[in-house]
Amino acid sequence: MNATEKDATAQAAAVAIDLRFLASDPAYLVALGFGAGLSPVMPGTAGTLFAWASFIFLSVTWPGLFTPLVWAILVAGGFIYGISACQKTGVALNSPDHGCMVWDEIVAFWLVLMFVMPADPLTQLAAFLLFRFFDMVKPPPIRYFDQHIKGGIGVMFDDIVAAFFALLVLALWRHFSPF
Image (cartoon, rainbow, N blue to C red; front, side, top):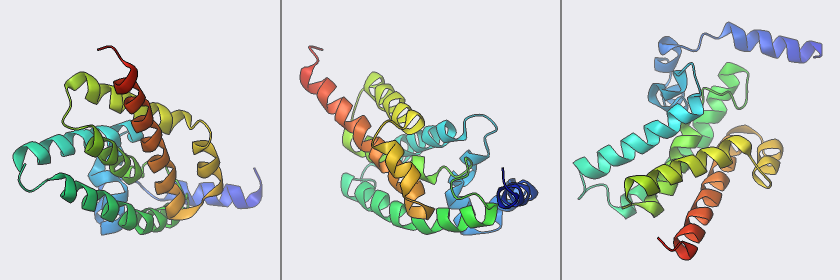
């Protein structure tokens, strides 16, 4: 590790990623998934679980309001705002894609659910597991985008590609499955 990397690591360690940080700026609140990113264990999975729970809660509680069109607007708007929120948060943390930033997982999994729902619990679980697989393993071309597109757009974009791959596998499963 060179001197610049050591300085960046020391500065990132100096930022306390806690409720005070979360509440200090609306961009941080969003980037950290309204607190899901504060999970000490697998924050990306916690963010995806938040996305799943919030999608179900909002869709069941207000079905006339949270229509497919509204979800499409939320996903598109969330993606666009997420670029700036994750960029700003990455700068504040001195880490462009810090693990506590989970808005990318939330928006991407909402996209998956937007196309999958309504679905039985097994299909929802399959969607969750497939998305987490593609997001964590980052097979090509996801890894390429993760490594070559930087800043807020990079944080958001690779998860959208992971969502696309999860949806592709689910579509193939539905098409070819005898069940």
